[in-house]
Image (cartoon, rainbow, N blue to C red; front, side, top):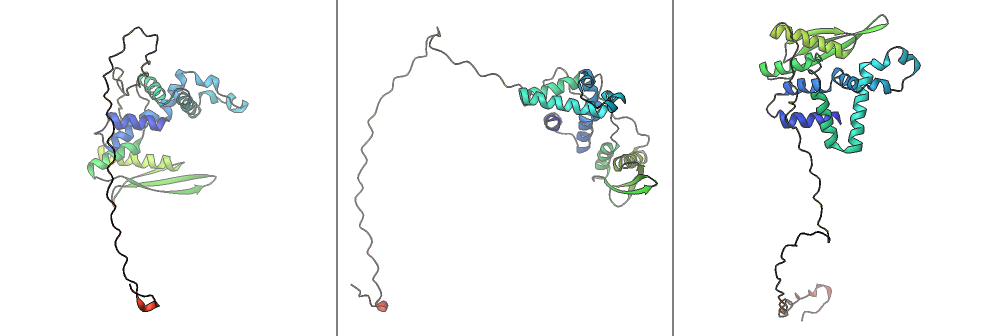
Amino acid sequence: MLQLITAEYLYKHHPGASEGELTQTRSAMVNTNTLAELAEQLDLGSYLLLGKGIAKGGGRNLKSLLANAFEAVLGAVFLDAGYDAAYHYYLNRYRSLPEPAQDENFKGRLQQVSQERFGQTPIYESEGVKVGSTREYTSVVFAGAEPLGTGHGATKQEAEQEAARAALESLVGAVKPASVAKPPRATRTRARRSPPKPRATKESTEEPAATPELTVVAPEEPRMEPEQASPPEPPRSRQFGEPID
């Protein structure tokens, strides 16, 4: 549901944005930090059913659980009141944030820069190596034949983010946090469906509109088409012993 809402918003309100800009805006709207902050506004952590161990370990404040809980609430709004209600509910909550929660999506920013400079989407080549009891990943990002940056991390995603950060530093210098504009408060992003108009009843005091007189015209009798003579049958061959008339 959240993916559908953000996709519709971006499609309608950012028609001229590049793929990189759309990726950056979408990331700000759906990342874990944003959803967790929205869940904290509703105090959803107090309503989570958790095991004793994770509850004692601070599970009610865990961002991943809070983000999932908010998505569940959004799904419940959709099931109870429909898509329009879920769409406006999410955007109204998102607008209430002081500013969009930042999620350093270096991959999205690199994609924007790469498309502007090279006209290509970055490609990542990652490989994991086991070091002791842990596994370490190395990722190299390319835009064409030349590598742009290399990164390391405990997961493949972390390594790719580090590679994208290194590539951004080599292309544009020091990487600053990207700013993402929120949907304006005053602008209604999606028209609500108006309720159906009530039908007039017999007890209504309004005079009914005049009904135009109808002229009944008797249908014309169908014309009988003359019977067409059936075409003569072709003569039969003598080959099989049948006479020809």
